[in-house]
Image (cartoon, rainbow, N blue to C red; front, side):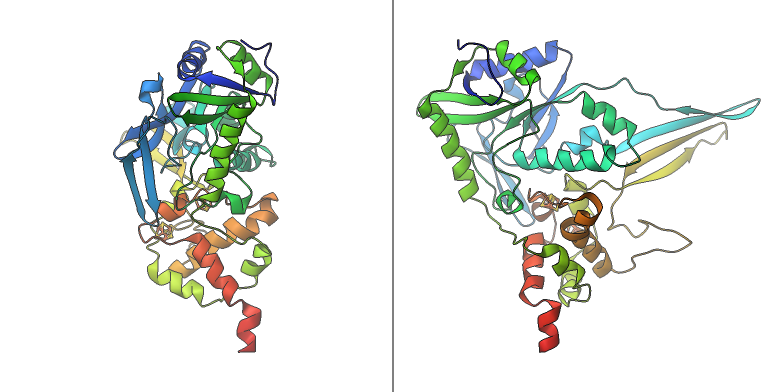
Length: 382
Ligand code: SF4
Ligand code: SF4
């Protein structure tokens, strides 16, 4: 075993050490969440051992298409992101906010209080680390801090996994968000399968990460092992299925609210909201009150909402966006343009989920490119 692990240095772990990592995290009181297979997709759920991981499986993704396929090897992380993202754990899809009970003095409000959950996320990809960092800004850095998100986030431990392949719908290289995890993790792993040898090159990103390594059986990575890990990440970078030209995109979209492409996409968009549900950065929610028939008990719930829903931002007795055109334009312009004004970052990390999970295969990279091809200034010259 090498001497005490250091942040930023590279070490190797074998498959057994990965199993021990899951056991160590569980024994330390973490709920380990990671990739599992269910209903023909890779989704994030409880992981108790490496047997729960989708060993030997990969995914084939295209606009509106997702299929799992067997791999020729026994890789544990040989696939890309699926329909779920980590936001479902930090920002739950449905959350009770408070309960009201009738008493002799009137209604008493009892805010919902939860024991802070201690999650360890296993298998977080680089684009997803960036998505979590964006949601941190939304939920914790503004004047209005979300207590549920904050409590879960502060207890969170992250084991990232660098991508060794890219999906056809990935474009993290364009968004400068991957495929290599550079920050925001406690431990980052790169899976290497080299002839008969199956191992992980590990890097600690925090003292919690070095503390974890100390409890595992690790060796310092030699130059060949480091080169193999770098080659895996470079392969993923070269396989990006999509690109998005981000140069000047903030102004491009704000200057083109009447571009004919918005009418074109409106003919294809079903306003189903899949893209916003699958997106790891979308954060909108609505609040509903639920009462029982006795009239003695009421609850207030928060649940995910979408700018594609007709009732979204309903106010003053009216809807704000009647047409599919206005909803798609709002979503894409917010993601790639006005998000910068609001949060000083793009709202898109290039994960490709909105492309894969759109039933019409509508592609944000294609829509942006179409507007760039004939921007407003050129249209006027015609
Ligand atoms: S862009 Fe696609 S996923 Fe999004 S609302 Fe329209 S049809 Fe649904
Ligand atoms: S907009 Fe699409 S590609 Fe960008 S982060 Fe959201 S789901 Fe991923």
